Image 1 (cartoon, rainbow, N blue to C red):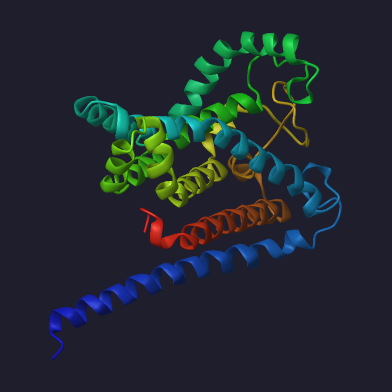
Image 2: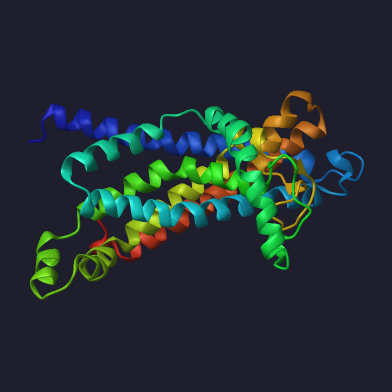
Length: 302
């Protein structure tokens, strides 16, 4: 006989799950309906003198993905190192304090990170950019001229990396702590050093969890708005130069900067660009879920 409490709990879980799907479908439907005028708009109706919606959103998609990739390149090794230090190297008291600080970093508002980036980081790092151009200017990524303010795509990527660190580190730390202790002890008993033990017993177990953490960080970087809007000096360009003042903008930052003055098809264009960001984020999350499920039996994330 099924008890009343079990029925109520089962019904509540079904309603909750269905509500999430309903909200997702409603958001997607709103974005699609509001985007249609922009998708079929002609030259003269699209902002920035774009010939079509795709020529308008193309640089924004590039800037969004480019900034997120740069942020992940910076944040992934740092998160991995911090998580390993907390889980396998640091004394218990230091690990607890450091873990608390990392978790607390996630509570800092994005506008604070943006202000720190534009008022502290950009002026501090700008002389280093001059050195990079002098030494590595022959590499296209570090070609000049250098931005005099330090408000570049690389500065924005560093700010994004700092913002991604808490969630990536927290996920990796929990995955590393779930690695089988018997496997670790067996590796050490066979004469492996601690580093070799991590290579043989911890990292293979946590591989899919690491990928999940990276994908979560990527989702955070793709959707960040205020920090990018404050730090970046945007332009309607597609380039890979890291240190110049001509930087590709991101979709989220562009919406935040243009929404108040947008009207008519211009407003529909911003909503349509939001639809593109919605699709990109959805694809990233689906890719992360696919990677995790491939090694479900070995993943500490499941």
